[in-house]
Image 1 (cartoon, rainbow, N blue to C red):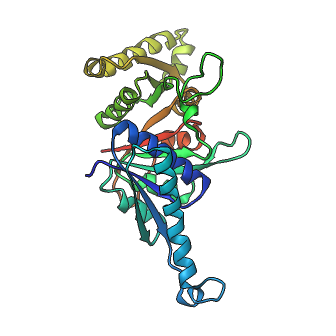
Image 2 (cartoon, one colour):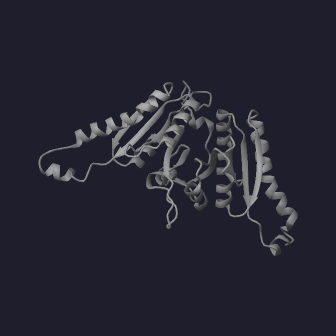
Image 3 (cartoon, rainbow, N blue to C red):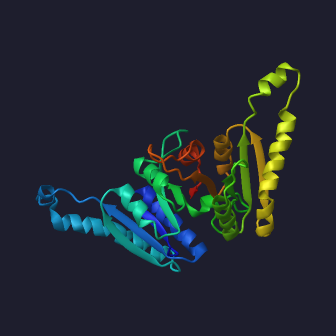
Length: 301
């Protein structure tokens, strides 16, 4: 795998925001950015139509990545930017094109009101199939959005990063996901907030009927499990400040809430190979659609 970040680019506002995020991430990692532009060939009769034509089609398909690359080079002079164009189905081309990258970045479109963000069928398919981490960036994302306010309460990219947030299931903690989150926090020189959501066991109702409330014991047990799971990582990354949040309730809800104050949210996706296809997972799916910060979905076995 080459050390590079690949961005899916189609000229939309969300893909341009993704490219900007990728350039900032590339500067932190000191790696190049590759703009991957996927286009679908039109049927020959349409391509030869007077209003389109083969030359016009080629002009527009080349113009989108060229202008995006020129803009990134001006705004991020220390980052190497390359272009690759592929023809075919968008999801398949993006998954295949990211195999030799260490990170794939895609855009997501904001919805009106409180609905959240739209991760279209292409984005969902890519997340479900890619085996490299996929970062989803909402349209309009700015560098200042990932930093704390300046002393005057004004958004600024000159201040420190907001914390990185990671969702962790202590029943099945995965090294790949945890390492990714700690590395991202260390690159940003910021804290890592680890969120664990859990529900009471089924026997809770029977305990209440017997006059026993097991909630306090459950709270202590879950918090202790989270502390134990993170202990080796605290020792491995002594320079990363870690905050633990073990809360009763939906893991997705707690992560979405924490995302409001995060520079990046990290969730895992288990790689499953079965006859019924792939699966993103309920928590990752909810966070992808509703977290306001960029979301990194890290596949693990």
